[in-house]
Image (tube, one colour):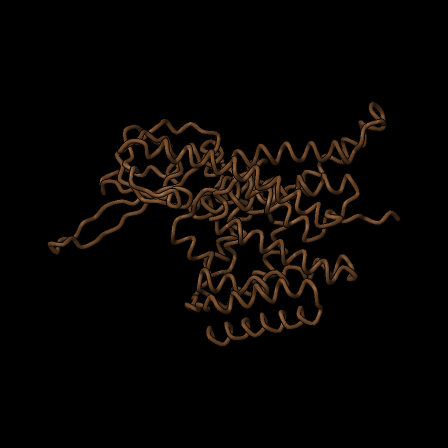
Length: 425
């Protein structure tokens, strides 16, 4: 068997990668700065954007009166995200495209790259005729329960869930399964591969035996996933997974080892060089952290059988990502550990739900979902200090080099898990 070669043979190769990445990063950042200057050139600018969130808020004025207004979270067609306010009488325009006049002349470049607030005035609401809207309507017609319909719309079209449903799924510990991520892309890749394999082999033997199944299957899968990625407006975690899949195949095709931290490093550097805005994306870093721990498991426990790896991996990822969850989100319930089981079952549920909706019988699993959503969930606030998260990160990187430190990392995360269970019982 031919041994896989390492991606970086020496420090010079790594230096060349950094130099190339820095070049692209500089060009990307220059383009973002140009767009920033265009946005802030005048006191106000016309912006076309999509409304991601819309909710009502009240506050007390200096005179002691109550003022009610609506808060809008919008994503412009040029990629930046911002908040604005609107009249309390504004109708529901979530997920619709609008044209507005925005007064963003005073924001900094840092605010532009993250999220900023500016006052605005809606000038036009565009007709709701996108493919995503058509897909959501198709899903909605198959379900009598509104919450179930919204759940599937979040799964298939990345539609934002109402706050109440977000809280429910957070308490159940399944938020990571609802929000489309690299995990979903991996499941889709596997399904597409098996769908493509049979017909292709049949045609290949008869018409084009000279073609490479490996290359053609990759082209087929990557084109469909790219279309889906663009359809969803490139969520950060999905973008990370797509780039990693693309890089992984190129390395695999050239006999380079792909289950290594070098692959993850190359992916992260490439994405940040091309899309510097993602440096400030929490979803991107959480997604990358999840892959880091998957690779850490496969590196240290590659001697285990495939079945045992499949069974242990969800438990491993849950345990080692728990400190991130507690520091960032700060809530925990007794249902959270069950996400280990739900993650394994989701690999079957997700493709099955897609098939059922294609066949226009998407409501077949509604009873099971309604039962799960009807569970009485009570989460407690359980925030960890950032110092504990810093220790988690240090131990994680150190465990790459010493197995004894990996054991210490596992013990550390088990202690946090026991602490969480103790506080919720």
